[in-house]
Amino acid sequence: MSSLRIAGGTALLPGHGLTEADVTIADGHITAIGKDTPTATTLDARGLHVLPGIVDIHGDAFERQLQPRPGIGFPVDLALADTEAQLLANGITTAFHGVTLSWEPGLRSLEAWHAIQAGLAAGHFTCDMRVHLRWEAYNLDALDDALADIAAGRVHLLAFNDHTPSILKKIKDPVEGAKFSGRAGMKLAEFTTLADRIGARADEIPAAQSRLAAAARAAGIPMASHDDYAIPVRDGFRAHGAHICEFPIAEEVGHAARAAADHVVMGSPNVVRGRSHLGWASAALMAEAGVCSILSSDYFYPAMLRAAYILAGRGTLDFPAAWSLVSANPAAAAHLPDRGTLATGNRADVILVDPNGPRVVATIANGRIAHLTAAGAARLG
Image 1 (cartoon, rainbow, N blue to C red):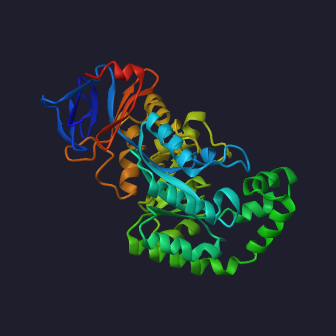
Image 2 (cartoon, rainbow, N blue to C red):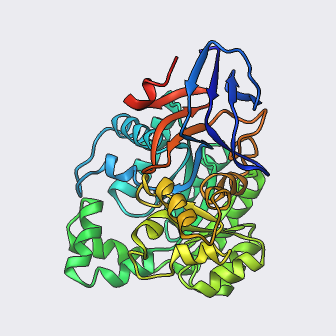
Image 3 (spheres, helix red, strand yellow):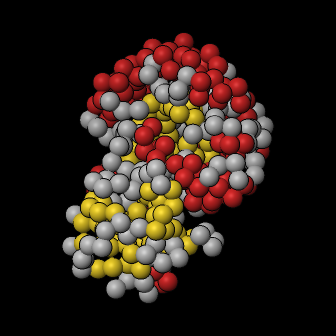
């Protein structure tokens, strides 16, 4: 397709809000807005919202394609192909896969990490799929691998995780412990022995985190801290250069992070469901208070589109502010200035949405029609 004109829709334009305007695309970029430019192909967008593509800064729903049941795995190429189809169908044109590199065997192991890296490198994807390295603090044996992948440009965002103390506590309960051992493909007794051995290395963690932060700074990639439970913890990661605060457990941590000009990420499922599945802070209220600046898919890709429309419908945020939570703001936090807004010269990541739903009718990723419903196909001419 040499060029495409999205005609007659209501486009979300910087500084203008939702405005009737045509958007013209060629060679992977937005070439004109609001001009009657002759093109080879036209997509009739009347009655639809024309929006910048969604940027998902943290999503791990792909794990369900890799391992739909505990211990039952599928080939990475098949899992990533299905993941991409889900992303594009939900208007997500840039996806940071939250790949956990843990000491746990199985789904989050070093072997799985290498397999996902290889799958992403070998695939020809339309969605811009990137790697969000979720570094488990106690995974010290894999430190050199992580450092090498950061230096080689195979990591696009580094997040500091520390789930081990929680795992050590939960595995004392046979029911809770079975969830972790099942994911790892081990018997609970074996998993408990492994976890206890790993947990004895706490003194080595600060030096490892310092080395990772230095590598990320040298590579110029953004950094995040995950599940911050106290302000001094967030302050410590900020000192390393981590300016993204993911899923703060306490609301006061989120307020302190925004006061320090950090990006604060919450989950879109929290907004759609009306509450956190863990009983933590309300993402909707934190967004309306100006604390949450980014919404991610977390564990459910369809939630991002729906969350933005829910927030706009609640009345505190207007639609441009609500949509920025899933597009412009995550693009800025991820150091991607070429997307997140509909502007001439930007990467042509555009979605057409029927607001009566809402539902995605068409997804254009890097200038290519990557998803089109039957209703959307009828609009193509």
